[in-house]
Image (tube, rainbow over all chains, first blue to last red; front, top):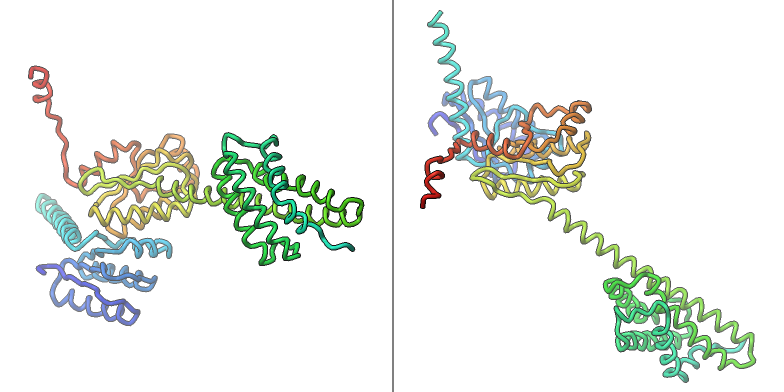
Length: 126
Length: 291
């Protein structure tokens, strides 16, 4: 979808699957030159600490590759579990649903571009 | 040892005993004519006497025996209904204890000169009625505790309202102390409402929270973190000056959360973030009186 990759997770994640996702996603980001990644976990009822960490890792990896990640549609029960586990996914952006996540990504990216432009204009002024 | 005459006495003098007992209860200090009518009292007493007679005929004196089950059940419902009506525990137990006098006086007459038999039966009857009396107190207390527990649950539900105050903005006014059990309920209802209303911002108002210690702050931060995971931003409002001081002294780090002094401030911030602007239309306001 344009500059964004949409990753709907439909099945229960187990550890191997999460690692595969991590691999695929990083490859896809470079291949498609994606600027944003939306991970939809609205159909996940169970998220353990490992998956939580993988989500964090994916986000950091995507950032290294120049893409912003937004995790969308987390179930209330999942959110409570993650907090109880002491995982608050610092540094991962979140949104209520895909639509809001998309909006969030756009704002984020335009902010980043504004930043670049400002740097550019500063340089030209000097 | 002569055979027990309790059951014999009960069968032979059923009506006189009942009559004297009801009279006794009505005349006693603990009679509550305002709470229970005479006919009701009579029905209760008769029911008890019948069940008691049946139970005693079995010859067993242990109230846990199967023969006593109907009697205990009757006492159970009796003390429950009386606790609801507003009887005190001693008044409720007094129902059973007041039965001693008519029973024992009948026993005395039946035994006549047989002192040993009388003592034996008196002892048995006293022991039995004492146990039954204690049982009523116990169930009375149980009934009370159930009421308390139910009220506590209701209070928990009542005390965590999540209201939508604008498109995409929900508010959660917290009142009372936050403990772990309550935090969980607060968290659940907040997240549930957020999903239902598709809100982006939640305002947690802690004006009604009397004290904030490290534990309460931790619970608050937990709620904020959970909301953040769902893509909801939290604003904590209603922090009173004393609480702000305590928080700094306790070195509670709230720098990750937006905090505002009042709910109005928080709402203003929330509206700005969701892209709303509020303007007051001064023209129409001044035009209104002329209409």
